[in-house]
Amino acid sequence: MDAEALARSAIARLRQAGHQAYLVGGCVRDKLRAVKPKDFDVSTDARPDRIMDLFPNSGRVGAHFGVVLVRDVFAQVEVATFRSDYDYGDGRRPSTVHFETDPRADVLRRDFTINGLMMDPETGRILDYVDGRADLERRLVRAIGDPDERFREDHLRLLRAVRFAARLGFAIEPETLAAIERHHASIVRVSAERIRDELVRILTEGGARYGFELLERTGMLRDLLPEIAAMRGVEQPPEFHPEGDVWVHTLRLLENLQHPTPTLALGALLHDVGKPPTFRVADRIRFDGHAEVGTELAHGILNRLRFSRDEMEQVEALVANHMRFMDVRRMKDSTLKRFLRLPHFEEHLELHRLDCLAGSGFMENYELVKRTLAEMPVEQLKPDPLVTGRDLIAAGYRPGPLFSEILSAVEDAQLEGRLQSAGEAIAWIRDRWPVDEARM
Image (tube, rainbow, N blue to C red; front, side, top):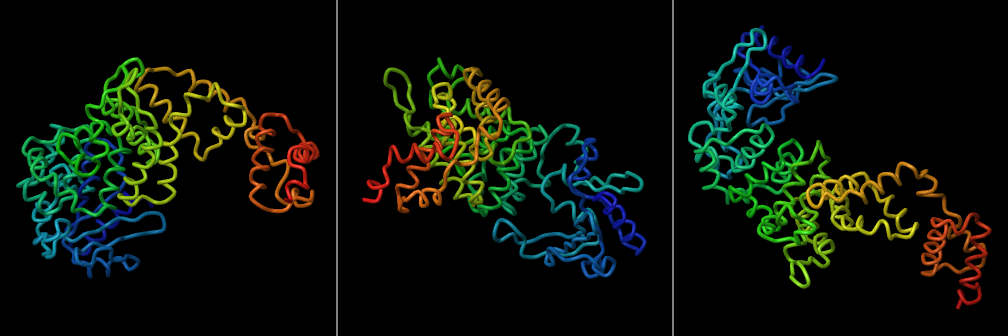
């Protein structure tokens, strides 16, 4: 069964055993918005041991917090005991929890009113103790209770408020927004991994531009990504960037993201991160070497946020190569083909499209590359090598640093159509690197 069916089944079993049980949180919010929920959570007055008895194949994922993972072959749902939380000493998790029998007590310890709704899946009846349904209709993200207290309890809620506002296209209720502005500096106390995950969600779940505008307005952008905050006010040459400064340009890229991968979204955010430190005015505004500087800055940011090595390599490649599209019409065939076969080149091409749309609107290089990829067979883009290191040894060459130079030169000639066979390649090599001289 799917997650919703499993959640309904779990609620039915809990009720048959004499317990209260409801759908709770984001799944209720999304159902009321006529959006298919991704996950389903259940809240109940049954204690964790009782839940484990009723669902023998379940497992505890938060024993201290009364959370049990109920699963079948195809799906899983979290079933949590009603609770109230106390003593958030670390600004992230409560040191004391009390299990409750009243669903209202469980709702009052949650973050935002739109996430504090419960639903009876059999009747559709909504339990709303915090006016969450009204805030859904008003399109507001509002903290439950005292917003200062909510953000002191759990600093990650500062970012979560921005994420929900961006994803849903909601405003943040004024008192809640004012509390975020007061407490924004607390976000740096949250673990890098949790910050990373929230930022990726802001970038990829929709409303990325709005999300980053909120981060800038509340002060969290400078707390978490000072390199991005530095883009604001950095002018660009109007003949290439009529849209405005580097910050505005970057926001326009984020606005046009359509269901991006995390690496593409990060590439869009970071592609011009090297511009503020390389800004200078000569014959016009220039950013000499900004791709190289930006690659180094991107590495530092991604490492600070604990991204994986593979993610870092791809994002850094996007930043390092985003200016190369300017030269595609002047590239030798070998250079162009090597460029087009970069790993995940579709992300490089999409970043270039977004970059053009956010700036001058010049799309001719994009169209050229897109057309070239469509028309070029794979065997031309990345043909099997004509010679290998073993072939060079068989031809009398001694292994060494020269091998890489020879093999690279042969591949260039092959990609440019000047060499067609292994025999031609060996003869070409011997003419340029005579065996006797190569052994010296």
